[in-house]
Amino acid sequence: MSLSVVITGANRGIGLELARQYQADGAQVTALVRNSSAELGTLGIRVIGGIDVGRDDSDAPLREAMQTLPPIDVLINNAGVLSNESLDDPAFDRMRWQLEVNTLGPLRVTTALRPRLSAGSKIVLITSRMGSMSDNSSGGMYGYRCSKAALNAIGVSLAQDLRGDGIAVGLLHPGFVQTDMTGRQGQITASAAAAALRARIEELSIDNTGRFRHANGETLPW
Ligand SMILES: NC(=O)c1ccc[n+]([C@@H]2O[C@H](COP(=O)([O-])OP(=O)(O)OC[C@H]3O[C@@H](n4cnc5c(N)ncnc54)[C@H](OP(=O)(O)O)[C@@H]3O)[C@@H](O)[C@H]2O)c1
Picture 1 (cartoon, protein in one colour):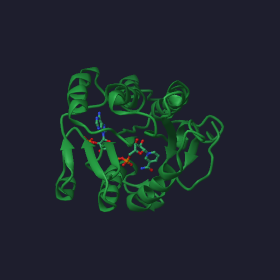
Picture 2 (tube, rainbow, N blue to C red):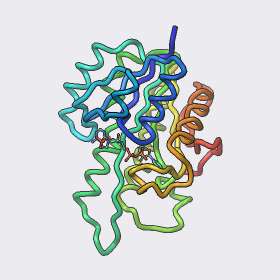
Picture 3 (spheres, rainbow, N blue to C red):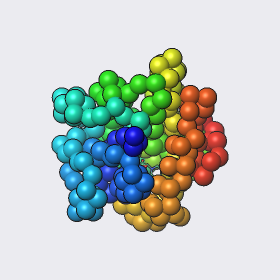
Picture 4 (spheres, helix red, strand yellow):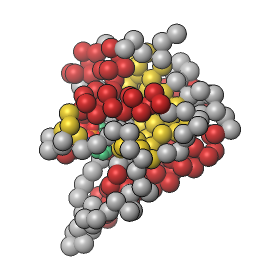
């Protein structure tokens, strides 16, 4: 039986590379996206469009999608957004937007798809070391930092709540990656980040559920 993998935000960036690599390995991949892309289209995987994870009204399309999905081995909550707020320009609307997409989005997706998760399933939250308190030595990025810190809190609660069901939860930082999000300024390609994330996902189990890790294997401080 091939691995069943569901990935949000798979039309570009890290999500697209994860979809490409899992597909190449023979997994049965489903992409949940707002809109597909030419590159995603060429993969020939199942694409479910119209899923905006930042909106409460994504619940209906998510639950409709859930009905058509096979049992899920790996659910990767990858979709995310970043904007830069400073003390001079706190831009509360952009902060709320990041909280909706980065923090509540993965919880919306996970709760809607939960009927397709069972013992042995893995839930991955693509978080960021920018959400670490002790790693914050440069300040700023108010919305992004708090959205990922709050996502980490959600990840630990999910790990606790789902441990008894045998469902493991991994909180993974992909590295500083050359994607649209970073203006292509990252240190590694999306392809390298996806390969490293897949190695960590392979290692994820109920014995190490709830950990905050770098894709390079390091454990990150909260
Ligand atoms: N790149 C890095 O260095 C880095 C570092 C740490 C963590 N991360 C995390 O890695 C994940 C992927 O980032 P990336 O670098 O690949 O960024 P990216 O290239 O900008 O891709 C972001 C993805 O998220 C999707 N998305 C955004 N808002 C959405 C919404 N409301 N509903 C559904 N999908 C939405 C985008 O789809 P649309 O095309 O529809 O917008 C796109 O597929 C994010 O969670 C990010 O925070 C990235």
